[in-house]
Length: 135
Image (cartoon, rainbow, N blue to C red; front, side):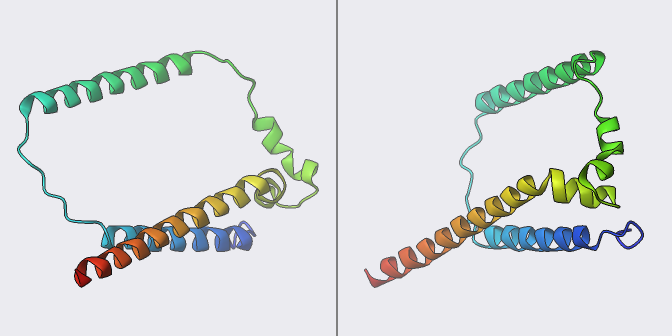
């Protein structure tokens, strides 16, 4: 698909982001502690279930109401002419390179910060395990 649309940069971006995200998820799942649940309280579970059902009903109602109204102008014409506005031959490159470049950069920064946080938690766990073993 990326070859047909002449967007190899988009293919590389998607490949790198998905690979990094998958590796981070696997690392987090590998280092999660085994947590056992205590006794299940039926009353607490019923309250949680009722809150979840009420919130689901609220969200569905909100979505149905929001679909009924035309609050904003449609932006499809903007995207139809985005390649001319950006001076690009490919609409995908125009949108990613010109209009979403800052957003894409900030997404990468967020993923790097999350990776550093996970790395520091793993190192903290290893150090804590070493100090517990010495006692």
